[in-house]
Image 1 (cartoon, one colour):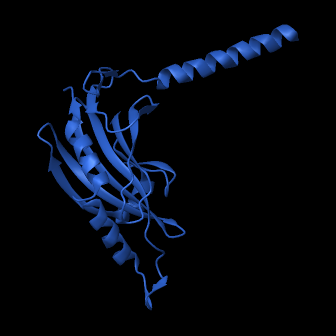
Image 2 (cartoon, helix red, strand yellow; image 1 turned 180 degrees about the vertical axis):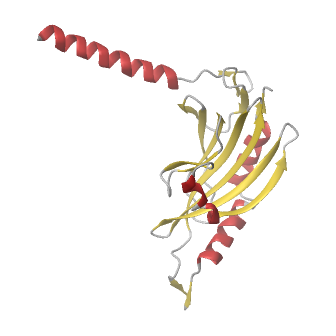
Length: 208
């Protein structure tokens, strides 16, 4: 019985170490603070503390904007076989765009355009999803395809903008008006947070 218990403990420790090693960053940082992951085929500039959250995604926390009641935001870059938008605060995680559940949320994709960084041309989507209690999730989701895979670069921000139907100055807030206000903040080039994300997006390079 003792031998079996010891074996079980060793097995659990091995599995935990295996999971940790899979998520361990394989990127190398050069003297300028730039990261490169040859396994995923991506490189990017450091705009915050870098964390590898799974086998395909790096994440950084960006400085919170001083306006529009913004909470700390996340900048992410992923190399993936499937397109997705990450909605941790509203949907609960990644929404893969090729699934039936995605079609039910497409009305939260309020604007689609493109951006050319000089390195790559990205399809850019603005997602604004109500998360409850006056909180909204605003996401800038940029994607491009190279080498048979997708590179997704995103900004994820929780914003307290108000509850639809709530009266402010004698007038009820509408979902459309609130989404418009949040969209304007995500496009505000004077916003420090948006500028940090723009710098991050422009730094991403993909090995084709």
